Length: 112
Length: 114
Image (cartoon, rainbow over all chains, first blue to last red; front, side):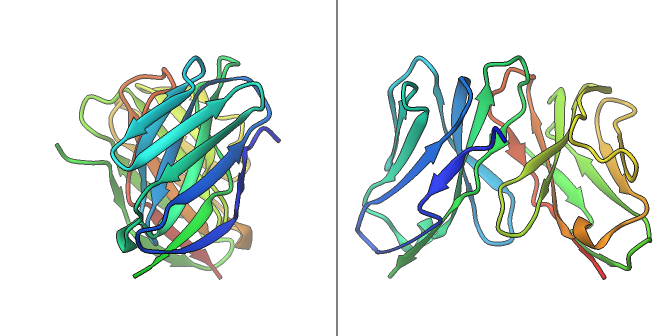
């Protein structure tokens, strides 16, 4: 399967701490995206990083991409209870097929 | 700007029955996607349309699933007959084009097959 793998599967931290989630994939990508899904709701796009980029920031989010290791990480700094959600990485593979291929997700719980 | 609309939000049916889901994408978005998300997993693409043409339906179980986007705007996804393993959330998403860019998701339809 080309689907990415994420770790950890679940993460519980205290408010104010940083949360790091990792994603690995198997095939060369065009870009990699991170999405958040709150319980029972649709997915919300967080950030997109292209294959020629190594790091990207958006507010409290920092994403890195290492194409040599076929991996990416999402760092959420100074976490808040409202960050509690599932986080998914999604790859657009460099094969001509432009649909997203999602990982299995990391369930983040931020304790107030 | 209105987001992606989906209906119904919830549906409970018995196996072997049929069911249909509706999606209205963001205005002006040429590409529409249907995903299936089984509990505890990431979404899996079922079908991708650009305008009213199918771009990718390689993972659509065509013996029971069908989808259409006749006028290149809203879309319906149908399951007939449903199986127990079809219990999942069905997500619709849209994007401006097929360039692998940001997708905007609707709230999903939660299907339970008994």
